[in-house]
Length: 455
Ligand SMILES: *Cc1c(COP(=O)(O)O)cnc(C)c1O
Image (cartoon, rainbow, N blue to C red; front, side, top):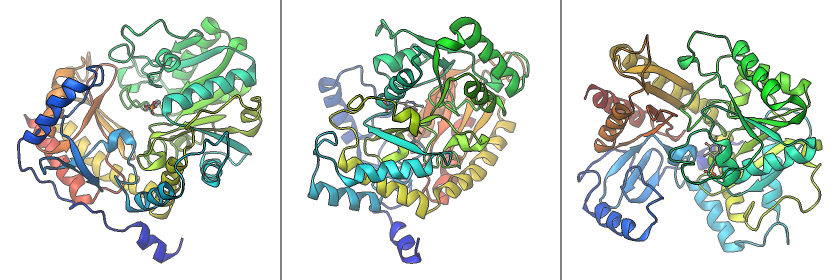
């Protein structure tokens, strides 16, 4: 990439990169909108922090009251390249002016093919690949399952404790946590089996990644049946389940065992993908080459797009017309993806995620040393978390403290930092800043977190 292009890509965001609070959070204008939301929008659609956003760029969200908040959430790991990144905005705007939709299954267009070419090139492994595009992470997960069943002729799909794969009927079955994702929404799809994850902080006694893999493999062998299992679907670092990083060797052992037994190893990299963890894809940290990889969230700079990328023989085993959808790979979303991918590569956002890790992780570890309520600090790249436990239980029962996690998160919000919580026990504070966040905002956000922890 030329220097001129680099400068182009890095063009300055349109929003001043400063935290600034001019009202309480939420302010009066947000409160008025929220009253309308409550009257117009289903109560089932929750909002974590009801500030109504007017603009966003770089590491800042601006609300309708004029408050500038530091963004430690990236809309759940979506705006990796920054919000309304100028290059994304430019190419999406151009595409909207040219055509907005044809349906790729009716009359195709180049951008869809270009996105698939980019995915085939960027995902782990140098083997021949194919991709298919969809709208949401859950839809892509569903399609990966369809493809795996078609290719193997087997029905069973194995997922893991604490896993999250979406909210559609099939993916609800694959998602572990009942509240709020599943409660009252069943019956769920059949032939989904959950086995133990490697969750180092919550193992009753320390075990290696290989031992944790053996535990999961035994469960699959004895309770599901190797010959019945089409695929193992796993997040290399779990997202909603609590940013759980499995012990080293766990993923490699599972992947190797899958390969030996004709079971497809499917990586759900919807949250971990596109430079988020300090590698283009989290599988790379352990040198794993999945048979299929599912991507979404960070793929298109905020536009709705998702993909399944996999071995050509697997992806091409599906009969013509077996995959698709009206909007899958919409041209506007594809334009966003091509711009986002150029930004990730052109600005080296993999290195940016590593820099964020080095600043944030050191600070979080410092905070953990001072706060007995921080049970664990974990994650990779710009996907980091602290797990909050009742003080004094870190070395013993590790009793989750979701109320304290909620209090800390709310205190951050009041001070103008957008933080998210997650985890099976609701006690994990997660940090997902845009990879283009200016260093001074990262530092200031961490100062505010430190203040919130102190109470
Ligand atoms: C968010 C997420 C999904 C679901 O994606 P949607 O676009 O919300 O349907 C699936 N898997 C993982 C790991 C996710 O983080």
